[in-house]
Image (cartoon, rainbow, N blue to C red; front, side, top):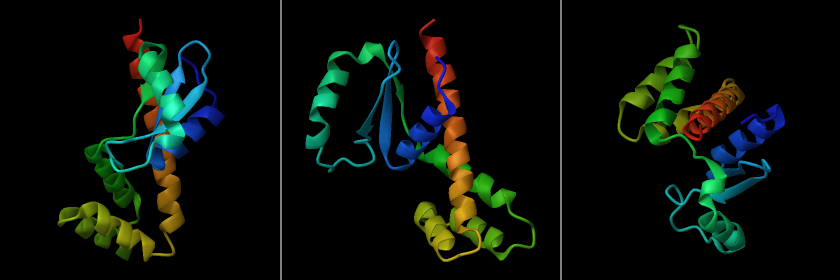
Length: 144
């Protein structure tokens, strides 16, 4: 399956917002539904029709789910590693990742660092685009 850069970008954005992507294998139409594993209490009423369509025809869709927590952790580690050695934030991020509540601690460190905050969002977005491309390739091979 081939996706356009625009589609890959949109999927990455939606995954980052806590949605799953369902791509119809023939039409390439994309449907985004809340990832209920991450948001079990979310009101799904606005998506009921799409959810029913997917449930009744799941074999017609390629499913792209957000990264698991261990994969998200790896993205955070890669970002911390990408920072220059002398950067104070690098040390703080590795501290955050090595202690309890690493996701919350990492977010707090990023949120309080105005210099690298946008750099983190850009880095994560690029990683999510790579994630989408890899998932499409893996899922596409299953259909062969």
